[in-house]
Length: 100
Image (spheres, rainbow, N blue to C red):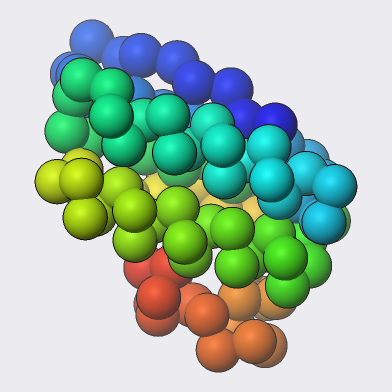
């Protein structure tokens, strides 16, 4: 599950769960999907605490980023753990996730 906080600069920061494997992927996507229709145009993903991630978790993040972008949101990263970055690079998803 992801936790959303609001900063003073109208950037909504979403802290991703420590475990982004199959069981957590759907919850993460659902939280991010809600932001596609919410107010505000800037979303920051904080994946600094992610310890475990699999292809399902990465796929959920790619789909959510596309949905948010299609909704006119600007998505950036405020943190990215080594496990998430490594998995994204291994699966060729670093570029679609904006982690290059």
